[in-house]
Image 1: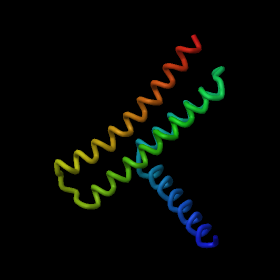
Image 2 (image 1 turned 60 degrees about the vertical axis):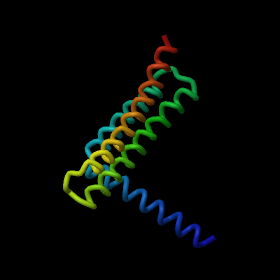
Image 3 (image 1 turned 60 degrees about the horizontal axis):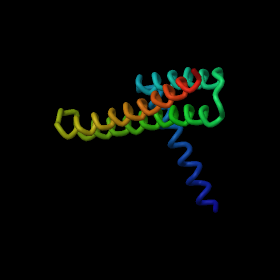
Length: 118
């Protein structure tokens, strides 16, 4: 049990370090954090039911998770080589596309919810 708790503590520390690093070094991550704060405020100001609010908040968090994964991919590729290579471009583009698809999902949820309010 002690080993489990130590590993849990370590994982929390590593995750927090990764989040802080992304905040400091990645403009895109900061932009998504601010977009999520605006989205969160709107979700609590508008007359939404709990499930709609939960969907909006969860999708916003998933966009942040996708951006963190994309950052990890970009950092790993850059660590291997700074040279341009078609496979490095594919990896980085796929990571970016993952963020875009997740953001589109959040946008679709907002559109469906707003249309339902009208």
